[in-house]
Length: 268
Image 1: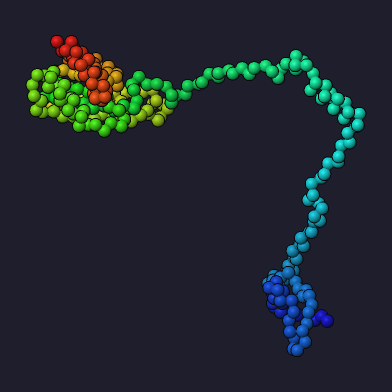
Image 2: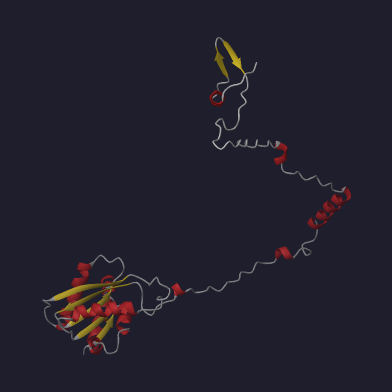
């Protein structure tokens, strides 16, 4: 049984079908069937008939299966010849197969040095400590990166100043200099004037109130930084002594005697 429905009834019936309702009641008799309606149930104002959407083409599943290559038949004579040749190689004398027994030679490839690995003239990073003792002695010493014995360092610096100046040190000050590391900009990686300028300002802050009479450089880093200063720097005209760093003297007491001898010769 079939009957014609209005556009709105056909649209409602189609929606019920998509929801899973495939039967509907008409009076007391259940009716089942298929609803045929236009793609656009409402008529257009311009009177143009809407074009029905193209039905999707169902492509058989066999189309998507990858092609299976045909099995290649191997000649029995060729197979036997290959097996016989393999047995002959395995049973050959050791002097026949020589290339597999040669030692492997290792060749060191040259390492190219990039711009970020170029060593600067100054040691970087650096950490130093400066003491202005009694307004007469400027002592600059290297410090390790993780130094925790500042009190012991102060006592050693005061002892050296007392023995060298032959008087009690009533007034003294201490300051820390630290340069973190290399410059990151590859255009400035070879420049070191920033570190020298910071070190020069560090010395100026220590000697601004009173110019010292003697300078002690304790450690390799402070010696290199001091040598990088301009020749016209006022501290370069003062008598100076170069000894081991104070942290090394704390670890090795024998270095104190050696440092004392060097200071005696330098300030004689």
